[in-house]
Amino acid sequence: SKYQLHYDEAYYWVFSQHLSLSYYDHPPMIAYLIKLFSIFGHNEFTVRMVALSTTIITALSIYWLTKTMFDKKIANMAFFLALCSPIVEAIFFLATPDSPFLMFWALSLYVTYKGIFENKKRCIYFSGLVIGCGMLSKYIMILFVPSLLLFLLFSKNYRYHLKQIHIYIMLLIAFMATLPVVYWNYTHDWVSFLFQIHHGISETSFNLGAFTDYLGGQLLICGIPVFLSLLYFIIRYGKFIITQDKLAFLFWPCLFSFGFFGYRALFQHMEANWAAGSYISGFILVAYFVINNKIKWISSVSFGFIMIIITLAKLPLLFTPQALHNRNEIKMVNSFYGSKELIKNITKFTDKDDIILACDYGNASKIWFYLNSHQIYVLEKFKYAHMYQYWNQNLPMPIKSAVYVCDNNVDVNSNEAIHSYFKTVTLKQIATYDNIVGSKGLYIYKVTN
Image 1 (cartoon, helix red, strand yellow):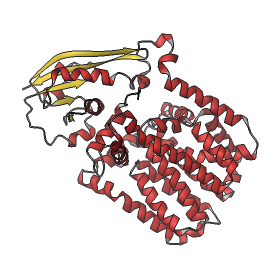
Image 2: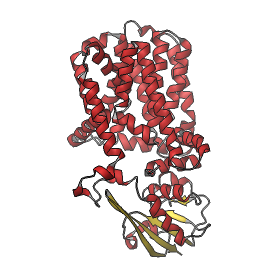
Image 3: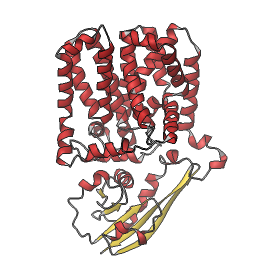
Image 4: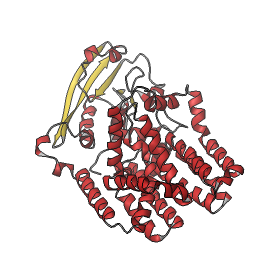
């Protein structure tokens, strides 16, 4: 692949080299899937086969659910709108926890619908396992549960499920599936749960800027035509949606996930992709009203929108404005270029058994992937050690000498973290890489005691 790994993708690949019940900042599903596809080789494509396979299942699940609920025509439209969504295109390309998370969210909707509306108890039980797998992908899968309970509570025709044991067995199965993550957190001072809590719900002061950023992010990840259409249809047909069980089943997961993160965005920054689960059922709602109201322009505008996004994303070096050439304004694009070329320079200063240290988990992970012959370490006192702090057990302390690598021009003479471990820090090389979208450097040091 000409697109090198993003540092997060490399980090999840490192997870797969250290299979565990959970990790510092994520549950383990992404690691297991990357490990599964690693049987096909060591390259960017095999890492991203996770994204490719899970996104295909996500899109098919949307189609299957819509066809089961309504008809083939609406199913085709929902499938098309999903493929025209930037978030679906993103998870199709990048190997992140969002890919399996959205797959399990979509599968949960499908299996739960079959269980509740067709009264198939085995589907209700199986949905517990699927929800649990979603929790093993991303913790925000938990939002699916209150969404489902709200639907049942407000549905006159299906409220009786709350009086039967099957829903509660489903919830028990989901909990049992997540016990490995709970146990890992118990044995690691609840670090992963606490990390996510502080990451997402720690601030309490009002922040209007964060809320506007959140709305802008939703426009972008859902796609402007689909997001605005979804908003219009919910406002225009809200009472009708609530009173129609099939539409209400789609509405509650959409509203609850979007509303939960929207509320938190009033106080602190929310990543746009956190609310992505909302749009799995959102695509189907839009498709339903588009087909029934015979609205043609939404699909064509959505297609035009995503083609522009794909063109800019896939050919950034061709379409980057001249004013931004050789600058760092397009950091997201620049992250997919140059790492492999820069990392090759490290081998000039290392032998096979030398210890290589990196300043944070992102640099360490990219180095580990592209060298593929060294275990890379991030010492515990470094600012972004994250999961690496648990992988330092085999290091002899104090370390006599090592190669230390970082991608930013930090004044190491005033860096307390590095000097708490080493007496001497000597710059060996500043490796550089330039292209149209930006320039980047890699600072290589020899550190000794």
